[in-house]
Length: 313
Ligand code: FAQ
Image 1 (tube, helix red, strand yellow):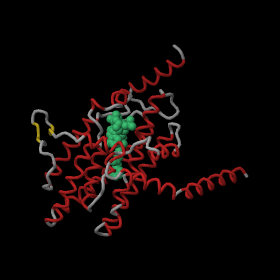
Image 2 (cartoon, helix red, strand yellow; image 1 turned 180 degrees about the horizontal axis):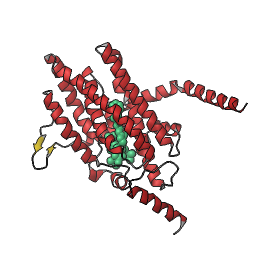
Image 3 (cartoon, rainbow, N blue to C red; image 1 turned 30 degrees about the vertical axis):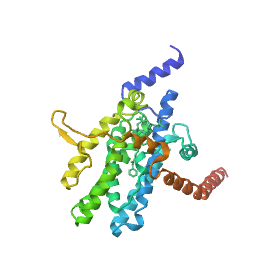
Image 4 (cartoon, rainbow, N blue to C red; image 1 turned 30 degrees about the horizontal axis):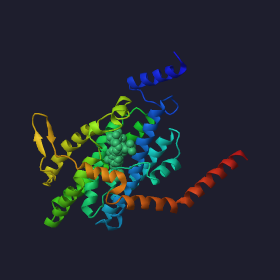
C-alpha cells in the first residue's frame, strides 16, 4: 500500500471506530476545508449573535435582567473565542477567518440578520435561538474533530442556561398584563420561522450534508434537527399559552412528531445572500468594531513580542 493510501485508510478507520481526529493527525484536504468552513461560520455566528442582544443592554427592565443579559452576551463572545481557537488548529489564522467574513466569503447564521425590536425579543432569542442552537450543538459534541467536539461540551452547558433565561423572560411576560402577553406573542410570531431556518435547507437540498455525515462532522441531519426542535418547543409554548404562528402545525400520532408548515425558502435565500433586514448593519458594525480594536491587537502583539525577547535575556 502506498504511503498516501495508508494514511487515508488510517483516517477512515478512525472515523469508523468513532475515534476523534486530532490536529496533528493526517486528514484529507476536503475534510480540513469543510471543517474550517463550518467551524469558522459557527464562530462568526456566536460573535455576530451578540449584536441583537447588545441592542437591549441599556434598556433591560431591571438591574438583575441587565446583569444576566450581560453575562449571556459575554458567554457568546467566549464561544466565539473557543471556536476560533479550535479552527486555528486546522492551520488558518484568526485574521484570515475574519477577512473571509468581512469580504463576504464566509457566512454566519441567518437568524442574526433579524432586528430585536422589543424586550420580549430577548426572551425569544434565548428560548428559540439558543434552543435551536443547543439541539444542533448537542449532536456536535460527538463530531469527529476533537477540538470542535470538546469546545461543544462547554458551549452546550452555557447555552442551556441561556435557553432557560430566555424562556423565563417569556413566562413572566406571558403571565403579565395583556400588553406584556401581546409583546411575547409578537416576538414568538417574528422569531419562530427564522429559528426553523437555522437548521439549514432540507436534507435533499443540503450541499454539504452527505459528505459531512460520512465524515461524522455532522451527526444529525438538518431536517432531523428541525423536527426535534419543533417537538420540544411546541409544548413549551402551550404551557405559557402562546400560539406558534403556523396554521399547519399538528400533532401526528402515527409519526409521534408534530407536522409543520413549509419554511419560506425565498426569504432564507435572500437572508443568506446578504439581503436580510439587518445584514448590512451587522457586518458594518463588526467591521467598525474590528477597526476600532486594531490598537488593542497591536498592543497585545507588541507585549507578546517583548515578553518573548526578555525570556531570552
Ligand atoms: N444561516 O449544505 P448546508 C448560536 C448555508 S450558534 C446561514 O446544509 P451545512 C448561538 C451553509 O453554510 C448558531 N447559512 O450546510 C447563539 C452552506 O453555505 P456555504 C450557529 C446557512 O454546513 C445564540 C449552505 O447554506 N450554529 O446561535 C444556514 O452542512 C444566541 C448550504 O447548507 C452553527 O453554526 C443558516 N441558518 O449545514 C449566539 C452550528 N443554513 O457554507 C448568540 C454549526 C445553511 O457552502 C445568541 N453549523 N447555511 O457557503 C452547522 O451545524 C451547519 O453548518 C448547519 C448547516 C446545520 C448550520
